Length: 129
Image (cartoon, rainbow, N blue to C red):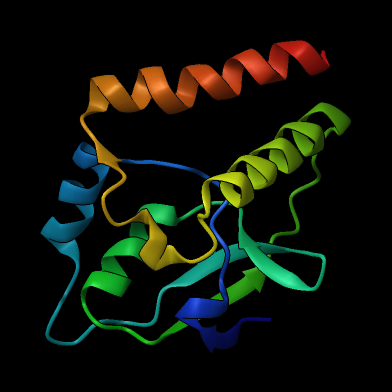
């Protein structure tokens, strides 16, 4: 069941955003009348962490939204996926990325996003396999 939370209480689980994805969301996002977006989260140490929808949450932040609608991510994660996810949370914590607003200045070109984020995630996933 979706619940409403402060946008500042939702924790990211990735370090960067793709400029192509940000541009695509901006194309359809209604800045004048933003619909409440429901995003998936997992609770970890008492805080809701996004498992998907970082770009949508960031664009909502840019639009001045103070609240997000979130729902518990019921996806069944494999053990390796959970290890990678927890590693991503650790990276975010180490980099000081604790809120959606912290992703400002961390939007990369698609090529740089692939290299700096996607490839990094793949490398750590290989370590846990």
